[in-house]
Structure formats: structure tokens, C-alpha cells
View 1 (cartoon, one colour):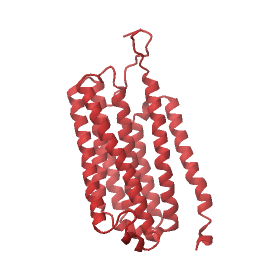
View 2 (cartoon, rainbow over the protein chains, first blue to last red):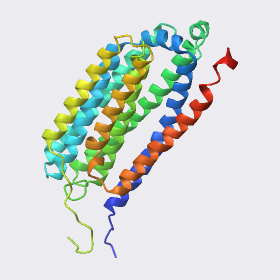
View 3 (tube, each protein chain N blue to C red):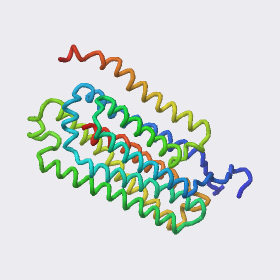
View 4 (cartoon, chains in turn yellow, purple):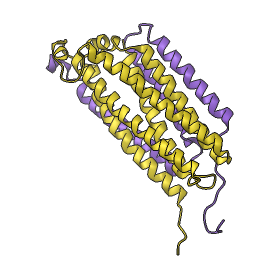
Length: 199
Length: 103
């Protein structure tokens, strides 16, 4: 009666189906981006040159490394190394926070230059540049929300691991949270070249 | 372990493999930043997207474990990307021939 049924394959399939809706969500925005890049190519190149490639590159390295730690955390728990799993999860969460701090610096620097959605300065820019910045704020903003959700999610999973609710023989929550985190990384892999490198 | 549950041993990715994937991702990041400094015109975007897709596949296949999943998940993933390609491809059949009308 009280036996709980765990469907490992079903849980994973469900997570992937959710990730497909996420791919479609960001896919729609990438479609918008590519149409406007096609229309305003020179303006996009000029606007992209104002973004800080160093900060963007640093954030890329941070996210890729956090993804590695996430994958290492899963492998560790599957081998029964609970302490190592917790350490790797903490590192993942810290890097996620580091990414957000960087993003905060980046955005506030733009705000200081009068570049924020609906600003006076933005309206005065040549046609296409304002579109670039609108897409920049929308897409990196939506991505940033995903990073924030991922950080909260992984913190909860860290607690579950510490309380042995997620453990060597029952790790699907950890694995699915990992999939979510890797998706966040995946989206950034495309955002970085499209916004920072098309100068 | 109850006998009716499908208890299969998990496929554990080795730390060494994961670290190798991470190194490859870092190298590709450096390559994409360096290539962006060479002016190739429209090819810059093609090269950047090719590198990004290579990185994405590394993440999906290894970090996200897709290389070791069953055919169902792999097929569904393909379907998701085919749908996305249709969205973008079909839109460009329209957009690509509109420039004259716009200006």
C-alpha cells in the first residue's frame, strides 16, 4: 500500500519534454534575432561592438565550468560519494551566482550610459541598434531568470542530498536538475557569440 | 530491491571524460573569440554558429548524457531540433526575399 512507485525513465522523459518547450521558447527569440540581424546587419555589428567581450567570455567560462561541476556532482552521487557531490553542487551554485553578479555589473554599466529598455538615449540611436539592445535585454534577461531559478533549484537539491532524500539509489531529482542547468549553459553557448562576437 | 522494478545500474560518466569535454569546450570558446577578430564578412556568423553547435552537441551528448540514452529520447531530441529548423528555415524563405519591399 505505502510502497511508492518510482519511474526513473518516465521522470527523465518528462524532464526532457519540458526542456523541449524551453528550446522552443528560446528558439522563438533566436528566430526574432536572426530576422532582425538579417534586416539591420550593420547596426547590429556596431551595437554589438559596445558589449564587453571580456565579461561575456568570462561568463562563458564560468557557466561551462559550472556545468562540469554539475556533471561531476551526479557522477559522484552515483558512486556513493555524498560529500563530493555536495561540494560539486556548492561550486555549481556559487558559479551560478558569480554569473549573475557579472551580468549585474554589465547591465548597470549599460544603464549608466543611458541604455535600458525604453530609454531616451535608445530612441535616439540609428534604426536597428535599438532593436539589438531590446533583444539583448530580453534574451539575456530571460536567460538570467533561468540562471536564478537554476541556482534556487540546485540549492534545494543540495539540501535534499544533505538530508539523504536524494542518494545513490534515488538520484533522479539531482539528474533532472542537472539537465535544467545544462540547458541554461546551452542557451548561453548561443547567446555569447550572437551578442558579443558579431562585431 | 524489489524484483519487478527496472533497477538497472546507472551509467556513470567518468571524471576524466567529463574533464576532457570541459577542456574541449574551453578551447572552442577561445577559438570562437579569436576567429571573430578576423573579418570574413557573413562567414563570421556561419563559423560562430558552427562552433556554437559543436559546443552544444558536446554538452548534450556528454554532460546531458544523451549519447547513452535510449532511442526514444534521442529521436525526440532530433524532432525538437527539426521543428526549430523548420521554424527558422520557413521564416527565411519569406524574410530573405523581402528586402526590396522594405527599403
